[in-house]
Length: 337
Ligand code: NAD
Ligand code: UDP
Image (cartoon, rainbow, N blue to C red; front, top):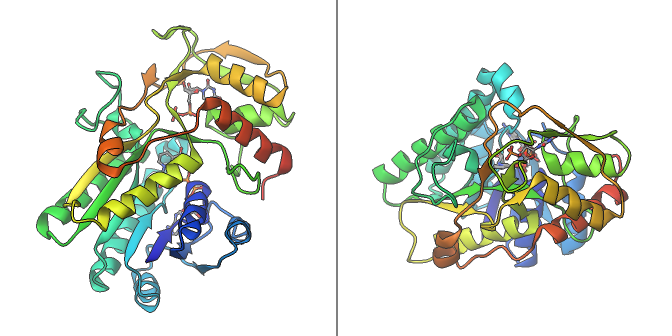
């Protein structure tokens, strides 16, 4: 199987490339390196003892992308390429719609041209907005409050229309909950360019002494300990979810456009996460409880039953393992790649 991975040099993409190579797939990465370092792929090749076909290019360049797809005889695509900062999407919405929405349209055109019609898309639990019910199933209503979330929801709608118009398309839309952790080797992991917005890399940098202390955004939520609750999923489990989705797309069971939650089904509070990280690292994590962050929901965790049943996939690793692996990556690579 020849798989194109757009955005494959990034955090989730590199872990997925590794799992695919370990399963003997032929992996071809197309990435403009706008938020990644090609060293991630060198390390993936080292871990897998196998090669990745890499091309530095922007998915909005439909001509180059089409030639890459046809020259490598691609069978299916996993589409990670996108921008992911909620804050930046608020200040520069056009950049987000252009990269995430126009970029996906360009990819769809290139795939049509090359008659490749199997696609796995990286969506996000952000499309559920403020959930009415927990855990969240795929049938829950969708809504978004920022351009990043809106770009994911727009792409989901475009993909559903594409599959509706042409029954040859098979599309697995994966809604990730909170990806975290790193490969257990400590060789590849998350490498934020600026001060992290997400809690896990922030806590790691506090533990290693790069940042002074964590600000907990809100201690008065209607949750067991008052802090925000999320469903943290180990990046290796998440990567394996993509392999399960590709197997599904290659089976006779696959039809049109289907959405799947990729999460553990278990909610973990900020205070619980800090405790697990302190245990894993042996370091004290100083924190202050400050005002809530605008746009945050109190609690968000998945009902992963559909992915369990249809994809035969289940997250295996818990918050302890996530923290241990995040810590190993942080200590081995204090300045990233
Ligand atoms: P990342 O930034 O590490 O990886 C994205 C990769 O895409 C980067 O290597 C970047 O250089 C590349 N890229 C961006 N725009 C491109 C373009 N126009 N052309 C070619 N390459 C381009 O992010 P990640 O955490 O690995 O996320 C991967 C995907 O999963 C994204 O679409 C993101 O929105 C989605 N997602 C991430 C999370 C999360 O918390 N990490 C949660 C839900 C969904
Ligand atoms: N959070 C926090 N301090 C931080 C970053 C995040 O208290 O510096 C909290 C945030 O309010 C939420 C949880 O940690 O309850 C997860 O936040 P993250 O940004 O990692 O993910 P998302 O909000 O996208 O689910």
